[in-house]
Length: 139
Image (tube, rainbow, N blue to C red; front, side, top):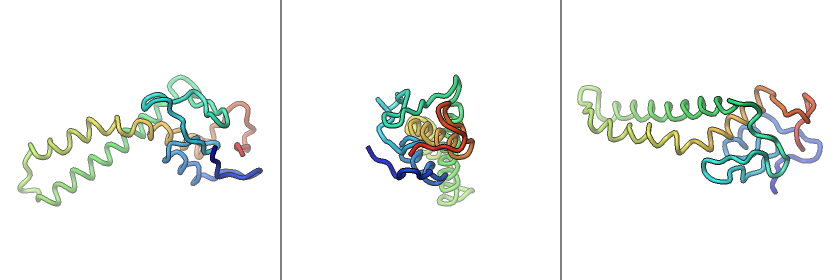
């Protein structure tokens, strides 16, 4: 069990977001949150934080997934135009590059989008679980 917080310390927003970006619990920093690639455990194995706070909770993860894949698509699209030049764009090579990004991207970023959403929720929206006081963090 690994934790970056000491007794009595509070995890700051940056640390919480780093935990989310590395597929770790937003409250204690514990890894191993997924039973399988698409199956998030119900609770953190270390601190017991319940992940799905309400029905539809992970709609925010969907938005994050769409934003990440959309950003990658936009960068790839603009880069291909810059490399080839706007006058010489061919549709087929663009489709060969961009369709796999749009098809595989959401699958590849699925676990990351869930842990990032939980981190955003905890770091910026202050949505703590019922066992925590408003200013309390796990330590």
